[in-house]
Image (cartoon, rainbow, N blue to C red; front, side):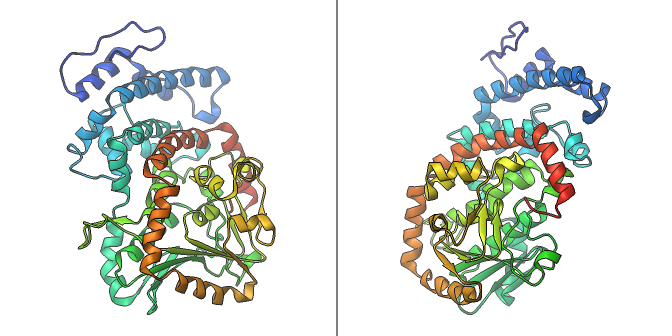
Length: 450
């Protein structure tokens, strides 16, 4: 296939040669990636650029991105097979992108560019993560590469494997933002304990949550999982439980919420594992390659943004009568994870648009909350109600039926198609000027929430 950019004369691809050779020929003949590098080096930092300078580098980036997208549309399976040794290896998204940067220079940003970006606030970045989004969209769209990558993200993390002996022996692992504890009743209790910022999620919390979910799924003594917020030290909520304030907007404004390490890892990592389970070698693998368990979520205070997204992947949800749920995507300007895919299944299209597009809050005491919450109880009755719900979900028939419900409600290919487009659209959103302006204001006014 010949890739032709506007104003460029066609350059036939070689009839033979590796996929790496074809990419190198395209880069050399078009000069598009080099043009972006030259302009970025010559221009001031992004916030100081004039409208004309912004237009010039945006046009150069568009040309380079068109080249990348066209190449991947034609060659993504060959690229993926080369990076994974014909799918014999199962790298996670970060390792896959790192390998692609080495094997295909200019296709995705290398570690040098990413390191430079990490040192800058969001407003001062060049947006190289958009090229990662282009790459991952193509991989996830592929009927061959996409399912393989999703399976890779369902494997246990090395950190969890390293902590598994301690957890199975002691029943407790304490991390900076999550505590996971297994009692004698076979319940793994995951308590989000970022008490200083109302459990607003950042890279640390996503890593801790995936580790905790992995441990609960890997431990054969665990039969049911619980996700709940801990007691806060934040001045406005001191001593009270809070579920989640969503994404940490201060971190986003500071440039510390990466596309791969947070926004995609969260959806493809612990949230996907809550739905589908964990992929690992186990004695009953002939029945299913996945180890799954039912999950309960208990909402105290509020579940904002990402907090509400967690509820959508749990099997039973309880909420205190004075709590509320929200997905303030329009206010923040970003996409609320996979909520756009899942939310309508619970509440229907009209209420989905009210919540996601218009920022409507759903209070636990109002009738519409029963579309999202199984039980609404008084705050002082939450502990007893939680324990009763955990007991109801402890059964082999529950496990088999949740598997079939999840398969019917969220087919893997439908999830993969959503995530393919999400990978690019969320990358574009976090570099939108409206988002940069909004999160900057929110971060200045708020200690956490998003």
